[in-house]
Amino acid sequence: MHTDFFSWLEQHQGRQYELHQKHINSSFVKMLRTIGFDKGYVRGEGPYLWDKEGNQYLDLLTGWGVFALGRNHPKVRAILQQLIGRDMPNLVRMDCSLLSGLAAEKLVSHAPEGLSRVFFTNSGTETVETAIKFARCMTGRQGIVYCDHAFHGLTTGSLSINGADFFRERFGELMPGNQKVVFNDLESLEQTLSRKEAAAFIVEPVQGKSCEVVKDGYLAEAQRLCRKYGTLLVVDEVQCGLGRTGKWFCFQHWPEVEPDIICCAKALSGGYVPVGAVITRPKIMDCVFNSMERCVVHSNTFGQNDMAMAAALASLHVIEEDKLVENAAEMGQYAMTRLREIGSSCPFVSEVRGKGLMFGIDFARPKSSLKLKMAWDMLHKMNFGVFGQMIIIPLLQKHRILTQVAGFHTEVIKFLPPMTVCKEDMDWFLSAMADVLEDTQRIPGAAWNTVAGLAKRAMTATVAG
Ligand SMILES: Cc1ncc(COP(=O)(O)O)c(C=O)c1O
Image 1 (cartoon, helix red, strand yellow):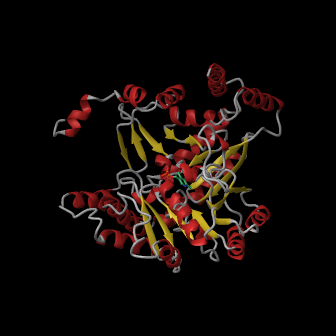
Image 2: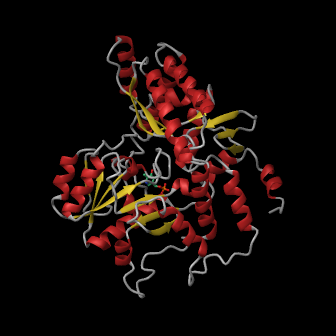
Image 3: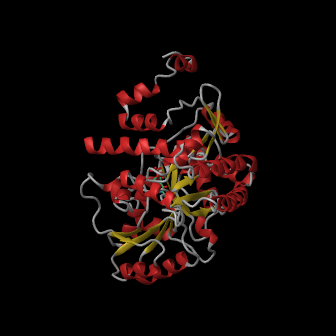
């Protein structure tokens, strides 16, 4: 390979779809091409992406929340560049790194006082796997209680506490002994916890797949029940944590809540280096690592690597210094208020919900207009979930805004703007939404023709498959 890496890369421009089809995931390429999302972006900065024709896009998907600071944040980049220019004694393993100590100190400074220990991981799912193991070790129990519609990652342990069958199907037997409860329902939670079999109750304060938010009082009561029945409370803040909802951690919207374990990742990376963290109480950590012999009984080869630790430290500093938590609160409030107003004139909109800069719009069969009801029914008979494409396709093709449907078999479109987003960009998004929602009411019209075509093709593919 050339030492001039970018000249070498340039020679291969345009080959990405062919290469992915051949070597990575051909179904993914097919899906991108079907909905016209094969844009071949060539540049990213802040909240924007650019394609090779120089068109600018607003990115409200942010790599599933990784680019919470926007893409290529100059302060994070400057620190990583300095680090890479030095001969650091990275990952010695039989020593303690200063960088990871400082990253842990900074991270816990935003958590409740009782949670002062950190275990660094390399992803969200590894963070959840760690929380599961720590809870099992601490309580001597097996099972994990989780919510319907929950998403905690896709490795075997976290997959076994996934709230949707879709992700689990065809992967065989997973971890035994887990129990699903209804999200936001304290009765079903108490019934399950009262068996005194659960090591942990794990919950996302804002669910990634549904954008449902825990009700006021829910987490505090869940915490009381957990303590009563000897179960640890784990909040999965991999997506909603580190400022996105307008507090450092989302559970801090309810001051009486103090979980036993906090999971975070995504934003911690600064969009540069994968990293996650379990934040927990000393007694839990000391229970896992309870002797010199067991001091690495839970560990990972790449955990605490210098690049990840510097990215984490830099990201935490940027979130503090640039007041991104405050901006997320303000911009989130603005966007959701305006989106509710805009949505109220579209009979397909059932709800706008979320917290801070993690919000979504949900759709349902209209209550009025026979024509709209018939169109809805026709589409849903062909394919449930395709309605969302009627929103995300024109958002990208007409308005150059990148979004995605929140999950399989759902109509929720989730928006995860970077925490650096400004009012002008929110207005770009809001006027685009007004236009797209208006188009859904034109029947027959281009929007309906597009999705009916997609639904038919998807149906044919399912039948053929
Ligand atoms: C709440 C939550 N937990 C865990 C995960 C898994 O994270 P990762 O994809 O980094 O494994 C995700 C990913 O979206 C998530 O949203």
